[in-house]
Length: 601
Image 1 (cartoon, helix red, strand yellow):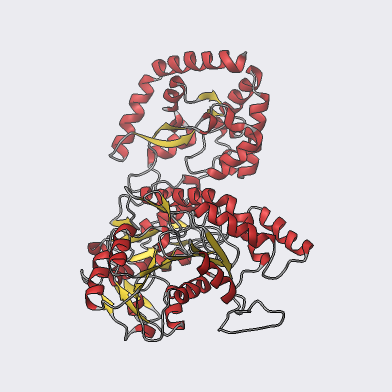
Image 2 (image 1 turned 45 degrees about the vertical axis):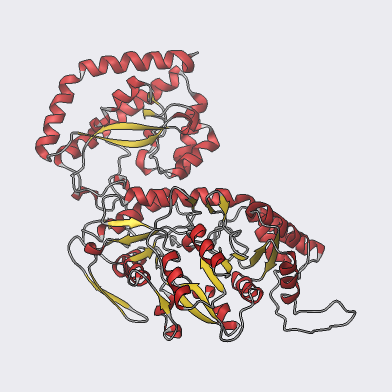
């Protein structure tokens, strides 16, 4: 009865009385804040409320207007430089929390309850789920607050919050209320900043943050446990080679997910591309149109077959092959019959336009969907647009087998050829009979076990990648940069990697050789080399975007077709890939955002 009725009744009455009785104090504090540091007296934070819904929490502003956004004070190593004189008093006395009386009156909070988590504190919210602590309204103060406050580690804090949810009663609320009063008077459990060694200053001497204890990677495997079950099944049944139930199941499952008729499990995405190039009929000396901005695994199989890549420039809308440049290429080389198209960083290319051009010129499409599994273009999965399509299960992909790949097709004869070629082209005979060149390209049943355990989590991985992309986009909205683009009307990427592109007028001086880069700092400007070096200092991995193939020394003699200047070279000059690992916490991403921001000071 207390939790369902009287608790809310007390919240309304007490918060209403407090707003009236303390109105004079509100006015005095507002004036003091604005005199000390001109700007708004209040600020709002997105917080997690009951049942993990979001609400805006009100507080008095205690930080200077120049403070980095979205980094909680206890995560700054030297927060004193950002806290105003009035702010220090407000924080010590906890008067900065006073505007939350409004949240209590409106029913978003209670006087007593777990402190509301920040919108990006997924780790704390997840821990609270274990104890049912997300099922009660957050409070102005609570059981965890009087048992350590900012000093508590997340598992301890969540456990105390769960204890409150379990013991919720009038007497327990009174215990928390008076305990909080004592803590405020004593100023106990209040921590301003992290007490860590190995602290140094980032970028432009603006933000002081410690390096990450555990490296934040670009993109690594996210495992769930079933992978080990299926690997052990291969071991227990002794199907450790290139046949077995795991392979059969994975091929069937991918066909169902992607929407193709046949899938052939292979040892890598590169081997799948090689098989596709063979199927396309590339012969020595044949020119093949290839996406220019990509990893060289896209192009190498053409060379394996002694074909000659002709590189088609990139367009700015998706960073993929430019259909206009492709049309121009056919005008220059009308005899070309094979086009290799990539969906870069999980963003679908303009396939309607590309397919129309290829169909008109009688060209076969080899689709490199290694980075885009799960992405859709006009509601259709990538991996189904090519005559022959390829996906990858490399360790950094959206789902992984640690290695492995697949050739996808609707052509049964083509699928059967690849099954034969990939097992050394052994003929159907009682002895080892070989009549054409073969390859050892078949997927291992053990690797297939890892992939089998990953497939059910594809959508989950994509959703997390999307969250990462959108959080970067929001965090960088005030910087002179854009995120890697996609056609929001027609496509849904899998957001494999989040990338940024610095505006031309915000680029500082940068110089690159084939192996090293250097830069010169400029106020309000930055460049990929500076940002990547700064991230590395903090134990976070970023990378340049793909260096276009026509800029690679190995392909310096190959033809390159463009219609709008060298778009790929420009993207390479100004773009970089951000840490996009699914296991990166929201707090860690928030720090990365601040590190990038500091490079533009």
